Length: 114
Image (cartoon, rainbow, N blue to C red; front, side, top):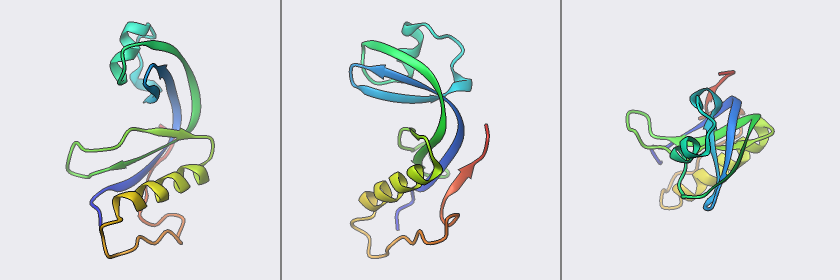
């Protein structure tokens, strides 16, 4: 089984569009909305636009390490869970054990209302 733990975080996010795609940052971390500051949160060099949204952030994290995937934000918790299940399956393809997701709270670290 992989050492990556699924996390879901409900809250406000800054959605930033760049030349390499869409990036999500916890809104509380954004203290300056100028493009030259926002680009520091992203890969890419060209800022396109940003907006603040509410949603459910989803990522995989390795507890005890600084390792994690980028946040991806969804409108519903169910959509975030589905994304994590599919993403975790990609990480576990080489493992013999299957991750069970029957229990809605099983194996997820849920961070409520930041």
